Image (tube, rainbow, N blue to C red; front, top):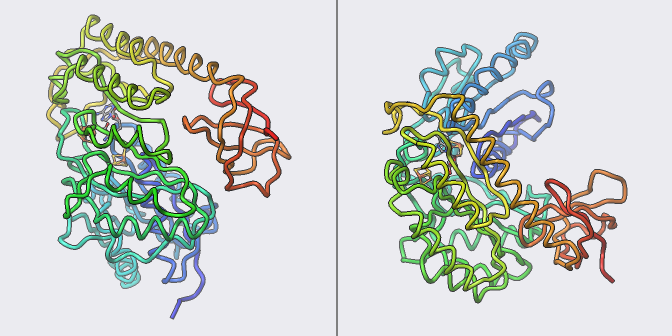
Length: 438
Ligand code: SAH
Ligand code: SF4
Ligand code: F3S
């Protein structure tokens, strides 16, 4: 029996896996009578689904909790929960630092949320951050019915065994685990039946995917590509060392596999790559890029970079600029190194803040230059665009090119969810505009 109607507000920080987890948490709470609201003031339960990747990410959570205090004072029945990677890393600390928090739940146990809410009702402040034997996905309700967009994320692999020296993910998400291909396929089918045409497969190391029966990511893509209605498949994030031959081959053969690959390298300096424990050199990474381009010549690459890793010299940084020039990324993210407690690099001597900031600016300017070049090369071409949602102006729709660039165009709302041919007419800093063909 469903319980009385209540409102849930979820705020999501961090990576796409958190976006997916937020949807599944909301679905887990639906049988308890919760439906989602976009306004925290209306909520009976607020969940912050947090990220711990950089220092600012965690601090943001504490300031958000501070901002929520007045809401809690005006509505004593309001419940506040902290989920995600900060919950995992700082569980006890959150309960002591933020008295307004009613529950703390880690990323591997959120299927227990309904039970935890009962504990809250009984006056407890439950904290669950273990890495349980059971698989949370076996205990979560279907969520396809709640989808309204033609695109969806689908987590297929979680956790990380790589232990890059700067990164908290192996500690917050635990060891690498791949979901059984059959279960992933079932979820993808349900999504496709609900009108989802593009699925992005998620994993902290998605290309390390290998299920109990030995199905690899390439094998999984083959299976998913047979699902009727599902037209586009993407996956993220990949580690260069797990870019297997069968996956590269899949890019040559499988039309539904989109020509966009997020393949972080972090640094262009072999010395820094070694200190980061990335286990490959810059030359190996570049050779890999070439092999992928040979299989799929129009592949658009994206990446992540860290500047100011401990010990990074000007020369090391120059090597990072050079790798950007060589790969000509369509898009890339860059971050200032942030020491994370408990990670191997945390105790090493830090690069001064002003040096880090200056390097970040130079790197971002160069990345931007290649992004502009990439987008301008698309002007004049006709691309298949998946129309996703109404655009900024009336009569406009926003969609996505195969290369993940946002495209704005005049199109009727009735076309939402279809893939249409669009002639690209102009490039703006972070998007393209175009017109319907035919
Ligand atoms: N699993 C993915 C990405 C995980 S985190 C991968 O292996 O590539 C996303 C990005 O955040 C990383 O690629 C890295 O560039 C950045 N990042 C991680 N830890 C960081 C830290 N301590 N300081 C700054 N950036 C960091
Ligand atoms: Fe973090 Fe490295 Fe694992 Fe990516 S591969 S999640 S950067 S430890
Ligand atoms: Fe952040 Fe956790 Fe994702 S630390 S980037 S939310 S895996």
